Amino acid sequence: MTIKQCHTEDTAAVAIFYDQAVKYLCEHINYPKWTYKEYPSEDTVKEMIANQCQFACMERNTVIGAFILNDDPQGRYEKAAWSMQIPEGEYLVCHTLATAPSRQRSGIGRQIVEFCIDYAKNHGYKAIRLDVVPGNTPAKRLYEACGFTYIGDVDLERGLDEIPVFSMYEWNIQKISY
Image (cartoon, rainbow, N blue to C red; front, side, top):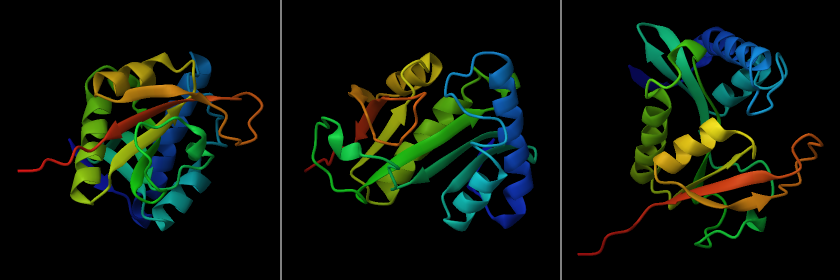
């Protein structure tokens, strides 16, 4: 299994992956409240690839996980009671993390989160912050198991009637002095 930054030639595979994941969620429990063919969608993937922030987890040329990693919180993150005041642009945000339905609970999510932590450390970021739909129990369990701290629920003013607040999480990178 490898994790890679996606490029234009990966658009179709990642878009199909997200379509399959969202379709599965809609037929079962749609924890993140994603909408089939709307979000995440092929347009989302194209935009994130163009912005160099779409990543995919690959196994034998098959997408088994995908996520967005950038420094754009897409909402009013400053409203959260973070443990450290860090200006926007100095922390990473993980968005739209999904694993293949057939591979859930196999450790892919944990490997993606560990990749995000290493990426943040290696690129000079001070923290990783993210938001989760409050009822998304699997995502909350994953982030908490990986050492993220729950900060509280916040209205990010995204204008989503079906998601008035988001559960906020942070993982601060500790600077070690010798």
